[in-house]
Image (cartoon, rainbow, N blue to C red; front, side, top):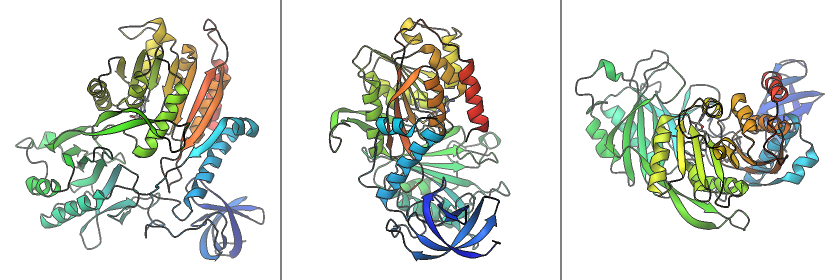
Length: 513
Ligand code: SAH
């Protein structure tokens, strides 16, 4: 075969970026736009020894799982990867991805996974579920400001103010911002030159409270421009505020300073220019054993700052947290560590049914929110530490941190972890193993790093008891997962040696997949 050759191929699977995968004459092909179950005509674009890439020329026989995407630009936009696939099939593939990673990376047997994994928790309404959107702002060929999303794997902006995953209000807010930029000739930031003012806009909505937050990420160095800056971070600021405050629910308008030439969206500095510095939202516990997952107990309310992490799918988050809560098996007497705690959401869920909770989080603003959230919910048995989990936990364990250090803290009943995609750092995992909690509840947004970390924890004396996927991100390839691990030995005296596990960690991390 040569480049541009056309051939017929059946799409049988989906890749990490949502691309279709099929086999042709012993070669594996990755084909963007191909949906599992399709028979298509493909044109080879890149050929390697055992695999290749091809483009979709024509669908010959459409998959029974192919649907017409709601969003007209879903195939171009990098936000959704699998909107052309029926939601039920998306769930099936996500569950399969978790299983495959646990087998391939984690080394668990298919039978073991089958026995311990419950069916993935899907969404009732897989559109307009996101409470947060970060739109890049740019300029089109006519020199007009645009907002939209990056096309997959690039930084070219596909203009789009109506996203089917986000809150309905986003469109109105974006239109106000774009009209303001046009009227007052406010320039969008240009990555190539580093010039221009408006880089991104972050919009967040409390789905329960209906409160809205708008945060403009701007390229303006406050230190170079001190005079009167508190009042005028952007030209004609009052006019923009006036328009935005007409949107029902508007609660907080702020600017975030980012003058760096970087892919990181937000800088560290936030200034509220109107209203409150935070919005609030409420989360309920649900009974995950009953059909329809009914609420149990009162909601907790949370304050959320622009820089704090807050789960993006509030409906599914309740299910995710409720599973984590169920897995923790609390009776009121337990000591719990919640690592990667964000604004303390999981910590406070647990604190209501535990003796004491300790949270650790790297972002200082999130810890400020967490402390305030404990107070506003009348919770006195949750303490929070700022820092990296992999530094705070070992320092604490080795007695290098000042303050309280009880036996309960050193050997808690439960450790909850909810790390970012890269998973837990080895220093964090090894300290967890030294602390020998009875149970570890691992909340993960990347099943590959989850599988890697579970392997290490299981080799360190733990056993998976339960595992379940929760779809937080419909129409994208991402999937969330919760696992319950139980310590196998009954004594805490035995502190195991960790050399083997850590060697393994390096092998998996470095040569891994
Ligand atoms: N459990 C929280 C947050 C989960 S997201 C919730 O459900 O809302 C992961 C969190 O880990 C983020 O808040 C992020 O800021 C934080 N984080 C990232 N790296 C970290 C590290 N090395 N140590 C501690 N926290 C970290």
